[in-house]
Image (cartoon, rainbow, N blue to C red; front, side, top):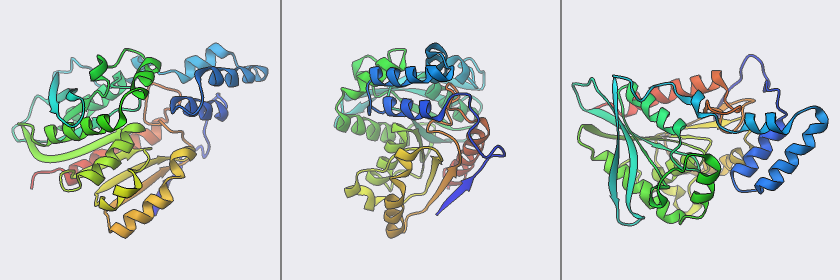
Length: 305
């Protein structure tokens, strides 16, 4: 069962045609080449849209994504490495801890999209620390030198990497964080797009260790391991995200068969990536609601026993 949320506008209110968002999603997920993406955008010129305006609108502007400054006195951010013997040998991530804490804090793994640890994901980690969580955001691109500074290069780099080793790196990161000194032993995970898939994968391969998972518009784990998922999961979907939403009915049937604890939330008339405040796909009302629900879910399931 999916709980649906519709905003008061009842439709996507962007000056950019929906086709452009759909094409960007295809490009961002390797379905079409950059050349094909730009060719399609060029066809919108007859409707009065300039290529420059469309590309600028669809490309992330990370200056817009900083809700919590890295200089915020209530948090402390560092980079930490961890062993990943079944992955690339060693991984690295962005660790953010709350400065004012008297008790051990719950931990949350923050998992990026298919292009490395960009500024938006770092800011999500800082937002969590500001709310009292120890947040750790690994960079899948660390073996290649880390996120290169722009998404197109990051996407190309991640595409060339061994996906199985990347998955093992995130499993190692989850174990590192679960045992982190200062943590309360409770582990949550939140991920976006590819990161949403990783959350679903972690829920399948380490169901006893993951205390709460929140995938945003992510595809399910491989079918052969879905039967291991127990939850609890809070699963966020974007109403216009046909590619991901088409995977849900079969996944839900498996979760029901597993007697897994889950809740699925659909945000109508918004695009894949609606939580990312650095792009035109950002939907402020739905993003705020989804994040409020996410924080409440983590506070419920990650509190010290």
